[in-house]
Length: 220
Image (cartoon, rainbow, N blue to C red; front, top):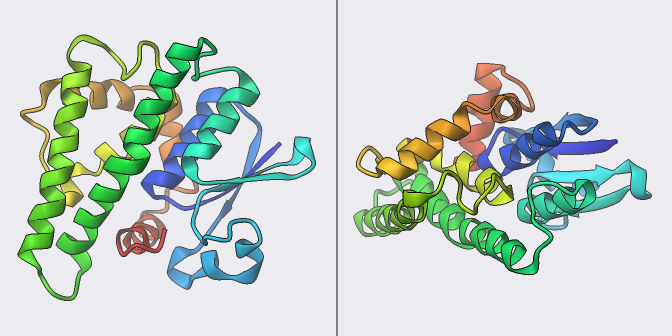
């Protein structure tokens, strides 16, 4: 059994989508970001960085994993799915996972903050992070020109990247002209496990908005 500590943010959705794709047994503990629950001592014992998601694998002596990319790799290796065993193919998937972790997520996250929540509208910062997000989307679009998924078959690279690209409008970045990226997004959205994972930790619209606001302020 996996215990998932999460909230409805792109990083949180990575973990819940992965668990749904695997058909794994898991329980959910919603973390109230708006109340600062992720900074409480009990949670910091799980993740010293005070961020979601976190999983606890009760089948392996309550092993704790934090950082969304590490969670994806751990679950993929545990179940033998969505991460190739061939060294070259495996490295290729991890490259695109790191592309999301080190590029798309941080740049788009800053675009959210400066566009939506900064007390002062700093045009340079808004354009800087929107422009970098758009550039990274262009890289994804080119990558998807001749393939259905980022690396051959569906993988953790796709699972990590989709929740961020899905929120492109909140960052003020459009993808209508990025036809390959748009097609990929539509393909991802049709997957039943993606749809189910997106509803975790709950479909209460008000809770979703409240938690997502905290994420966009940089608290998740």
